[in-house]
Amino acid sequence: MATKDKPNNKNLRALFSVICLCIIALGLIVYFSTQSADTTKVNEATTLAQTTEVQKRVTVKDTTEKKTVQSEKTTKSAGKTTTAAKEKTTEKATMQAGDTNTPYKSFYKYPCRETVVSGYSEELVRNDTMGDYRAHTAVDFKCDAGEKIVAINDGLVLSVTKDNLLGNIIEIDHGGKLVARYCGLDTVHVSKGDYVTIGQTVGTAGSVPFEASGETHIHFETRLDGKLVNPLDVMGKSE
Image (cartoon, rainbow, N blue to C red; front, top):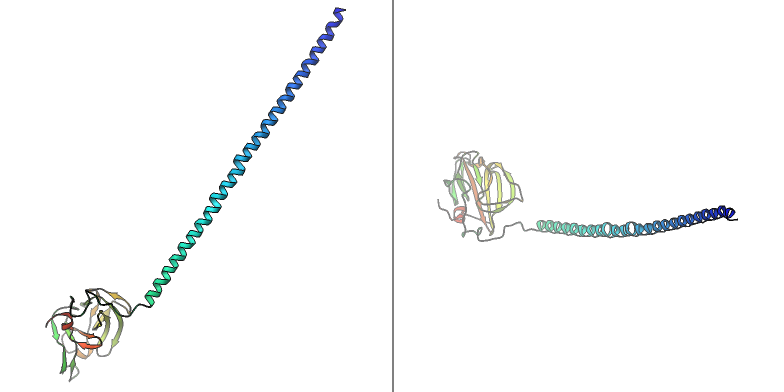
């Protein structure tokens, strides 16, 4: 009887071992399945949800704010440009009087050399070129053909014209109601509306048609508040 029971015991042990292995295998399967599910949840929370939220805050929101700020800066810049353009358009056509450009009280340069060919005279004087007598309400300063002619002071160019008797003319407002005319130019280096500074070259000497028989010179006129005055008095010079 004991010999017959031994095979049965072996079979039971084998069956028990198989059952235990199955239970262990099932447990491992359940364990790893659980771990996999937890990992997926963690990854989703850290990589997908958080990344999407951060990207929205940094790229979408911030970029929109930057564009708004940039747009405001552009609008302000455009406004300043428009204002500057308006101011330039409405700017007065005369220089404001100041410490350096008030007639009779400041320093003036000669338009070229200091040598005077013909002085200012409201009385009639002989004009050899025209063969008559007329007032010479200007000062003729000696210079060579092509010599540089400079601005006597800071000013605004009112006009650039050509006259049959005076040749090329530049008219400059030097402030304090003083307007000067540089006559008898060959070339002109400025245009209407330009601002010039004292000593700046405005052109070169040419010829004065109605005084062509005399030495080469620049015919220089000055008006104070619309009235012709002696340029040498205005500039504080003497012949």
